[in-house]
Length: 206
Length: 171
Ligand SMILES: Cc1cc2nc3c(=O)[nH]c(=O)nc-3n(C[C@H](O)[C@H](O)[C@H](O)COP(=O)(O)O)c2cc1C
Image 1 (cartoon, rainbow over the protein chains, first blue to last red):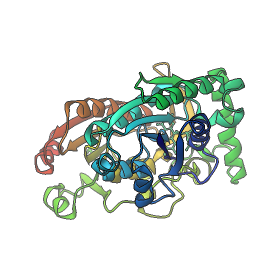
Image 2: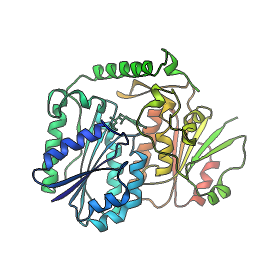
Image 3: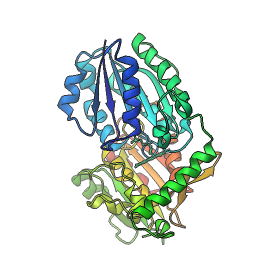
Image 4: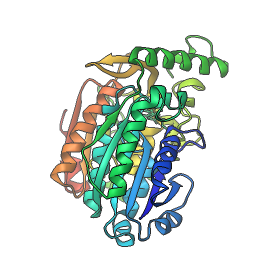
């Protein structure tokens, strides 16, 4: 089976989406022909060419203001029926990661993506919400705090390879929420210092 | 007097026909042609607090929100959410809140940057399904919670022309 992963993080490198896409690709690649593309790097023609005759599309993106990042949303809005024409019988899977700890906050972005499938005549496969995306580089996927994520990706990869659908799932790190929040706060302050901001300037209004 | 900021994706022609003309009560921000999209750098939080670092007109919207009593998101409904043009402006405007977390209803949300927060009004137009309307209701409530707006109203219309009436109704 031919599978295409489209990453929807606009970051150049080191995005959580890219790491999730790579972990998923390594679970799918032995059994399938799996290509990975970026909505912010590849143009419409390249993405549509990759999708031709493809059996599964996996969208992997960060949660932006409770929804889909605008550049990916534009791609989906403008390609709707063209995707169904290029790949009849395509099933869409989706992994959304967010900055807050709670993975459930990704449920709306999964719902928006499901609505995209309905309006484009595509089959919806399954969604996965991943909380605490800021922690993704803390360990290898499947290890330590990223153990839950590893299990969730194993199960998703199995469903994708079998062409099955499934209920949406949500994965949070094996790590306490209060510590994650504390580390996030320290990190915002230290990044602001690196940019030469004094304490308090980070909170100023315009 | 109440000051309303209207973020919209209307064509130039529709904007001329349907935007309110009272410049004291209403300011408007055209989402089309689109502003550049967010690059996920968080510069609006840690480099130039409150303002996006990309230098185009999309950087102005967050501070404008803080100067109005009400923000109207007037948008074509796309998959149950904002259109790509309107979303591009909103993604560029998260400097409106602080990066810091607070707990609300046992969920994490952001600490507000400004004491005062405008009410939100979502006016959606275009073809839509029942499911898309349901998603939009939830999305508007989630946005309001995350960006600190206390009141939020949502309405749906088949066309731009019909949706123009919603602006005259008080929320
Ligand atoms: C414009 C913008 C909006 C965001 N909105 C949310 C949000 O509504 N909820 C949330 O939990 N995280 C939000 N985040 C945080 C990202 O989802 C989080 O940093 C994610 O891990 C980034 O993934 P990536 O590295 O794949 O780009 C937002 C980030 C940006 C830049």
